[in-house]
Image (tube, rainbow, N blue to C red; front, top):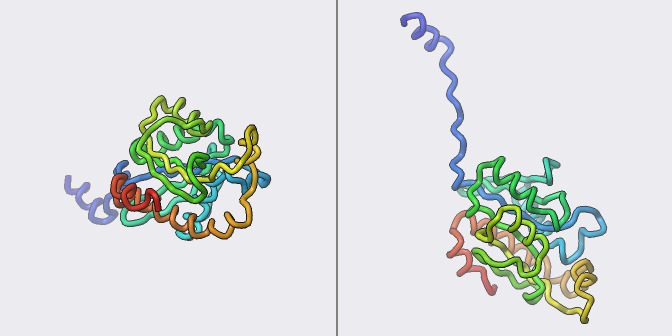
Length: 210
């Protein structure tokens, strides 16, 4: 016993760093398609929002399994930003992997995507709901087997003629949209941080419709 006490005094005892409580970790998923040809398209607004947030927080994305990851801390919360590398329609696999790997509760999952049913630049946070015809959300719902996750819909408008929906969402922003985009991206980044710190309901009340 005396020897053990002496060894502890001389060398100390290593203390394990406790894992962060899962309720203080957030997985923020931006939906998009990988590759330069998609980078500036409307359908990739999820990637663009996360790029803006990462830039504001001075963090960089690094290639990891099933996507690129950037992490930052804000007001005691850890935000893990994920841009899946699986292409839009297969996003669910990446989302499930990172939720499991980081032990993040599903109520702390936020998925950022484009929405044709909202005017350009409109932002809307929803606690749950259908995929609304969005194939990225459809796959996430199928893989997670639930619609009970929060989604952040960024309006891209619907200024296209009948039968031209795909061309529109895979098209690039027009000049007027490009002028307004920086302010909208800034607002979107603030929404995401609010989601993690102020909570879902407060964030909806503050940001929806603004």
